[in-house]
Amino acid sequence: PEPVVYEAEDATITNGVVESNHVGFTGRGFVNYDNVVGSAVEWTVNATTAGPATVELRYANGTTANRAMDVSVNGTVVSPGLAFAGTGAWTTWQTRTITVNLVAGSNKIKAVATTANGGPNVDKLATS
Ligand code: GCU
Image (cartoon, rainbow, N blue to C red; front, side):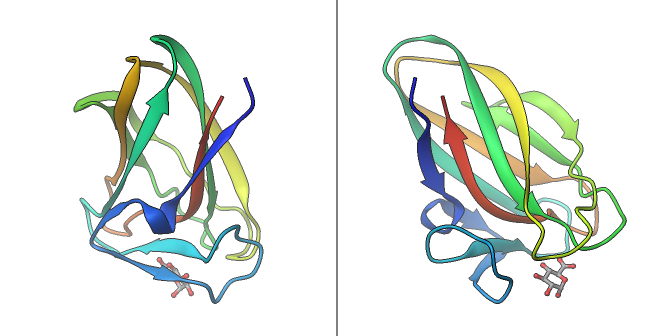
């Protein structure tokens, strides 16, 4: 299916701020996760049918440290400690893709930082 884009700046943010000072994002900006364990972004994602879906997260990490996050779907961690390695610069955006099972209708997809550095800067999530 055609990708459906969900901007991070439109999602539910826990311990993070919307910023736009590093070019290359889509929409109005990106989420700068606070540099703490547990900072998070939660998207509400629609699925027309139940079953596997491709979830692509677009991010930048201008450091050399992995900013790992736990990714959960509807409250269950499905991708623990997913790596978000350095991208070389805060203006260099890359994608990380996982396959998850969604229910038909509304789903909650949450990416929670697991290290004291917090998450990377996250631009958007896309499902397909
Ligand atoms: C810098 C950068 C931010 C980033 C932060 C971090 O301050 O400008 O965009 O989020 O580092 O280390 O998390």
